Length: 240
Figure 1: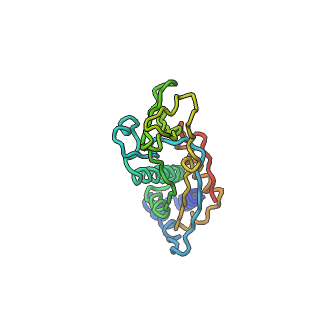
Figure 2 (figure 1 turned 180 degrees about the vertical axis):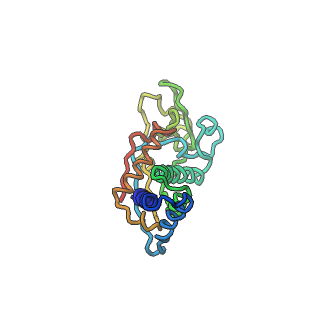
Figure 3 (figure 1 turned 90 degrees about the vertical axis):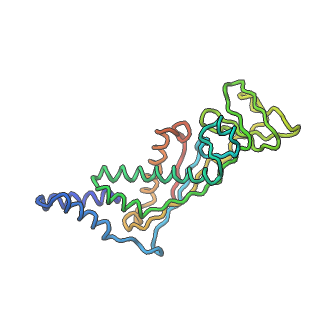
């Protein structure tokens, strides 16, 4: 593990030269990291990952309808905004895990920052557009929609639970919550985030698949213990 290796280097310095001041020790640790150098682009390492099986948060969908965003706060106003949110969410959570590991290894913030600057995360995800939506207010909520406003999203709490495939006439009753008539569950491609982790840090570039699997899995557990608890508690992670 990168932080375990650097922690060992730090303890070795401290035990072999107790007279060296903290700033010099810090400089040596930084030199250890920087001395590894940034790998040339042709030698960078990339891992692919997939997070799947989560419940779709409203923050990961978008709508251009102001009235819908008023009823379902958190929906993005555009597709680009939804994609940017997802990318920030994944990137920040992975970075939080790495920062936590670095601090537990007593690494200076400058070293941690340098390591993170050598990691790029790219997300592949096509957000759902809710052209119509109904926010459930109870088990007997009636869901109405217009055939020109497809798909019609059904929102329960902070989660988009299903969509309604409306048919003529122009306005129809889609369903009543609890009576799954004419309702489609959220498709698997909307509950799957795929992406890549690319590093130019020599030590991280030699991480095994299991080490990256552990890091991304921990990031998802962090999401499941935070504000997205009800969305990511059952999510699974695959790294290749």
